[in-house]
Amino acid sequence: MQNGSIPISQAIAHHLEQLILDGTLMPEQKIPSERQLSEKLGVSRSIIREALHELQGRGIIETRHGKGSFVCSMVAEPEQESTLMQLFFGHSRTLYDLFEVRQQLEGQAAYLAAQRANEKDQYLITKAFNAMEQADPLKNAELDHAFHRAIAEAAHNPVLIHILTSLKQLMLHSVQASVLNLSHRKEFKQQIDKHHRQIFHAIISRQGEWAQKAAMAHVQHVSDSLRQIEKEEQSIIRAAIDESSSPAG
Amino acid sequence: MQNGSIPISQAIAHHLEQLILDGTLMPEQKIPSERQLSEKLGVSRSIIREALHELQGRGIIETRHGKGSFVCSMVAEPEQESTLMQLFFGHSRTLYDLFEVRQQLEGQAAYLAAQRANEKDQYLITKAFNAMEQADPLKNAELDHAFHRAIAEAAHNPVLIHILTSLKQLMLHSVQASVLNLSHRKEFKQQIDKHHRQIFHAIISRQGEWAQKAAMAHVQHVSDSLRQIEKEEQSIIRAAIDESSSPAG
DNA sequence: ATTTCATCACTGGTCCTACCAGTTATTTGG
DNA sequence: CCAAATAACTGGTAGGACCAGTGATGAAAT
Image (tube, helix red, strand yellow):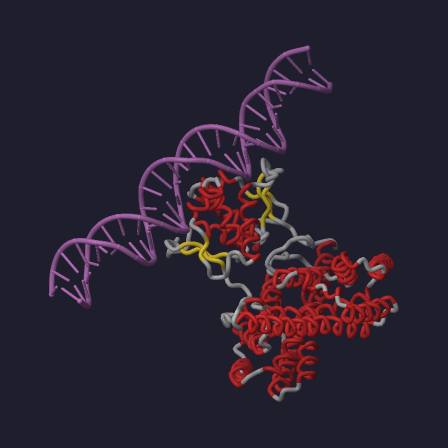
């Protein structure tokens, strides 16, 4: 582990945060006791306590005297349908909540970008857009992200940028990144490219309303596509279950 | 100091946070050293460190090895994966960035509420609305908040609720709460009440678009009013300066 | 056998002391 | 007078000791 110069307590706080975001530590779950962590990670209890306080400050964990520390249930709904199916898409409900908000904010970002983009912004957006055209499918996710990021930047609202970034992070944590990248299926990619073109031209030609509508339609389309894929995969799983429940070999 | 049951470290963290929010500790200013605080507050250094780590987790302070701890001025770092909450408690300009985003999301909340509100939601919204009518000016801010909160709840999107709550918190940190409460000036209050009525009736009668427009107009109006007040106060200050710079006596 | 209560083995909360590691002002040696 | 050693800060880490809640275990009283 490269120590660099960052304090161990921060490193541990970050480590635990990752475990929580990865889902290794689930909401409401008890975190190992301070003394356990201290021994397991080979650091003093003081360090563990400092790390836990940092996470506490972030509202990620909650500590109760005599009981232990617990992962805070942040956005999760108490509604637990623990079907096998729901285990795979357990975060689906929240995922679409994220999409719903993101749709609105991407729309606003596009609208404001059309109004406020200066020359530099327009250059960066154009650059990001052109880069996407030369579709190296592997880097598609990055490029897509860069494009939307450039638009958000052009809106010149740090709050908007921050929230959109956070939403994207949360979405990545909800599902596999590969799932979010729809470009590997041509029928989706075509529509996405079309939307991107619409957004791009609307912003460059300063058509705020159009840009907004196009951006919103874009997010809506991605969301719908994910729902569709989800259904398909469910039926695949169901087929697999039927198969395996029939007398095997 | 009533110990109650809350940990001393948290109490101290809260105390320091207050000092910072009050402006007693200014941004970029150095916080007394851990050993100083330890002695001054009569607690062990460990406690101080835990408190500081908590503030650090909140992004309120920043600690540099060998130098000390400093009040963070603002955090616009793009790469900060964190709770949506911790952005900054910035000054002037960012307040209107917050308003800009909030306008959009309040609009969406109203729209969704009109679509999704069930009986219970409608009851709660109605209750909050009626409570506002009986305007006890002192509790006006609370009631206003409760009304908007009820609408957000009716939208049935936890992400939206969370972000709106965070934005409100940030706005309260940006300016004095009393400034945000415009009800003490009749010309503002009338317009606000009118907007509230529009929003209320639109949601109850399930007119999504109207509700959205009304909500957005409402936020816009509050934002504009603040801008106006800001200008007035500036001119008052300027007048005061002119006065004092003219030969006194 | 059931209930009650004391005890004990956990948990986190606080304090302490010592020491390491950066930073900076001071002092010292050339 | 300047540069290098140093002293006096700062935060970072370690580990021991003890206090204070919590919950389970088990013994004693019913």
